[in-house]
Length: 130
Ligand SMILES: [Zn+2]
Ligand SMILES: [Zn+2]
Image: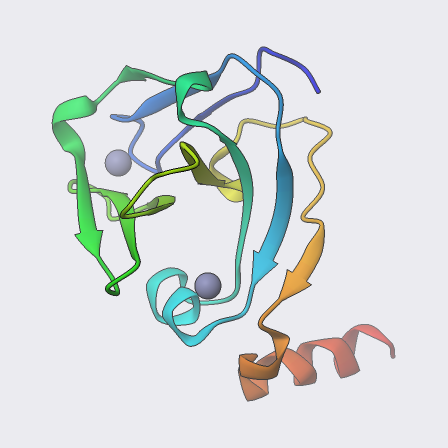
């Protein structure tokens, strides 16, 4: 994977860069991701050492969404950017695939927690098959 992947929040105040490989990608359908992102949340997990905040560190806030994890977002535009475990033992962070500049070669990977997928998600699939 390219070491020069870049991305930003909607307003552009927060800009980031990846200086290392993507460990894995996943599209999470849990109810927390649905409420946070408005849909399932596809992300790429990377070592925190490889996620470089280029600008906007003062606009990045973390919301503790459960007793296990917290979610990073832009306080200006509200973009749902990052997810990480509170204990952070494995030192990785998930980065929203939608925040990356395009074109890129990212893939949303495995869909997880699909048993929690919203009713609307199945309808989307039905429509796309027509
Ligand atoms: Zn923003
Ligand atoms: Zn989730």
